[in-house]
Image: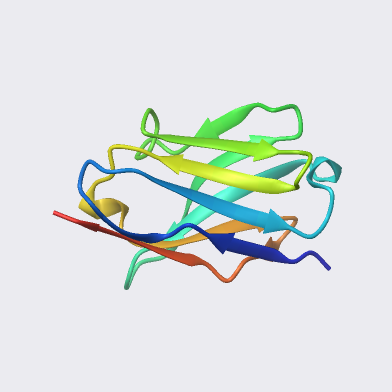
Length: 111
């Protein structure tokens, strides 16, 4: 079992920034990769970003250049720095590791 707890969501104006955190109950370097997903109201859950064990990062086209995924191996925490936020970024954001999911954190971007 792996427990994941997201935090850092909130309400922000368009153009603003937020940093999401995901605390993981196990050593994150034991996993091949970690992901962020998001789900907007009435829509399917979409992949946002990934960080592999090697440190390589990957992003969906919709967030590339605006979001940065990172991790702190010492504290077993995954991050998502979100800049230049747009109203279409409004969603519940989830971290995922080895098919385990957190409870999600709401991000709302006002225009």
